[in-house]
Image 1: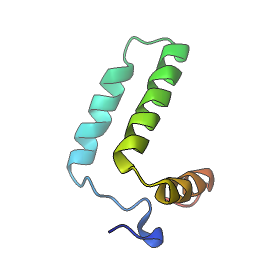
Image 2: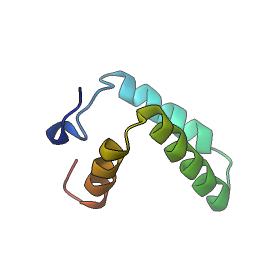
Image 3: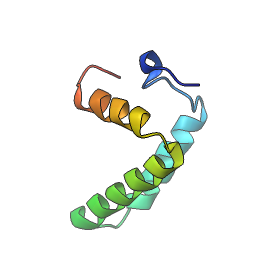
Image 4: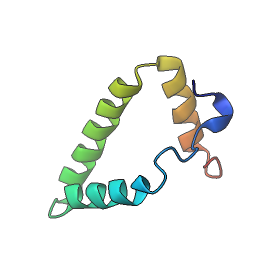
Length: 69
């Protein structure tokens, strides 16, 4: 189970680069507005995958703090 102090911990390992490449490919050719919409949909889909509101609140807080990751 994830804990507060492991928010931002690398869980993808070497696959992180592959995910980043997929993410960039998903945005390729999109306008700024389309890219923002894709990001919003992605965040909501990933939130549903996490499925834990308390955990999501902690992640949101961490994301707002510049040096948290």
